[in-house]
Length: 398
Image (cartoon, rainbow, N blue to C red):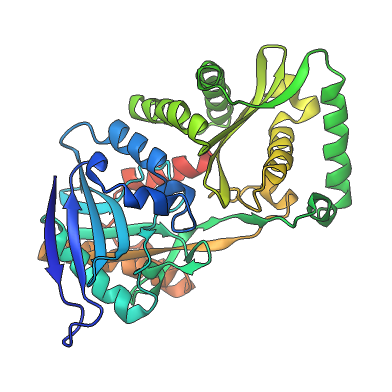
């Protein structure tokens, strides 16, 4: 079911948007699914990803789906916002469907998506009117572009830099061009560990195409990743019931649909390294990496499975790879780029004014050491310590 809200974007009526509010992902018109499979969305807005997300994380009153579709004056699709209404420290907060499993948050773009800051502002005003009562509208991990198109959220006044970066890698049509761009020492080491691995009896690398096989391997994959993270003295939350349910749904539906990639290094039936990625026609994003520890350190299974998936992805036609959030040394070895993700906060009530101001101040302060020190002294407004911990843990588990 949906509710409709209309709003004029200007006094002359030009650029007007209408909004429809949906309370179930299954109610969203099918036309949006077709757009999501093109360049109008990142892999985290594809229908398989979002359907699994809403089924796994929105199964009780603590998380209410609020999915808003905006259309132009003539009914042409403009923006689809996959959002939720949650409570955080007594505030009713509207944010993207994320919970730490999405590396970026953005609307799906239709043909009538805004391309100027003024039109983006007017679209967000209509969005706000369509939402149920809330204290804070909070968007984070906003990419600056979606494919080759500008992200309307990145055009808004008040958008600030966030603490996280995307790590894109753009591949040429000749894969050897990329390989030669990396440091000679790293190239030689990657070639060496691949030779070492191949000499082992039963050594193999596969892209898992059978969802049943993927589910069986995933149990070992979870254990390997959990042991690695906890062995570093960090907390691990991805084996929680909602997360486990989400990834199992994702594998079950995404592998047949081609929106999930699962690369596996095995010795016989034993998994020693795995990488899971989310994909659309244009992009592949690495989201989870799991590998055996010291026992197999001589063949560097983590770096090795990344290398094998990269080569496979190039052969499969992918030219845009993202190594996801989290600044780790191994990513620099693979010669990836870095693109800052953005944030936006807007109060929806007097109760949310302090929190919105806190978020904005934090964003501005990232470019100023003096302001950063001031914001660090603020207490009681904005993000809770628990929410900060969740964000950090999610980045650490990539």
